[in-house]
Amino acid sequence: MNTSKQNIPSNSPFGGQGALESAAAGAKILVLNGPNLNLLGVREPGIYGDSSFEAYLPKLRERFPDVTIEYYQSNIEGEMINKMQEVGFSYDGIVLNAGAYTHTSVALHDCIRSLRCPVIEVHISNVHTREEFRHHSMISAACRGVICGFGLDSYRLAISSLVESN
Ligand code: DQA
Image (cartoon, rainbow, N blue to C red; front, side, top):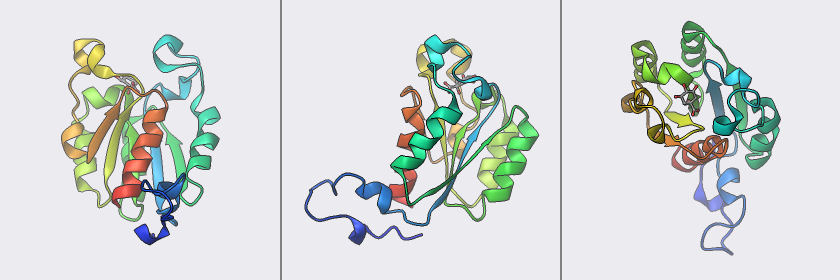
């Protein structure tokens, strides 16, 4: 992928609108959602909002027109690991919302450490304002960074961080 900052228009000190998105032309990113996130829009809307991920995805892709954003969701830990192993040596990054496996899975931690591409941990809710069992993540230490509490915008922020740093 071409991440040259020369793509950023010089007429704005911040690179202009969309400059960050276009700086990553050709990048491939996997958004991977774990258990129960297929129920976004239905599941506890007071916490997770009323939009399904499928409704949000086109908007996310619009924000990064030069980035290929693949989407995969599974309720099964092993399937998530298979998917990460499949793309983790050729893609430019993975945005991972591991759902409840965040708090339990050594297997996801080990998988993330095994990959060549960076993984960003995301959460829709601010897990630190919720039950104590959500305060600890088994995967954070293996990830490049963690973004939580911004609703679905957490995914956009994670992709921006990958695009900027890759
Ligand atoms: C979540 C937070 C987790 O604690 C929870 O188990 C989820 C969703 C979030 O996106 O806020 O399933 O990852």
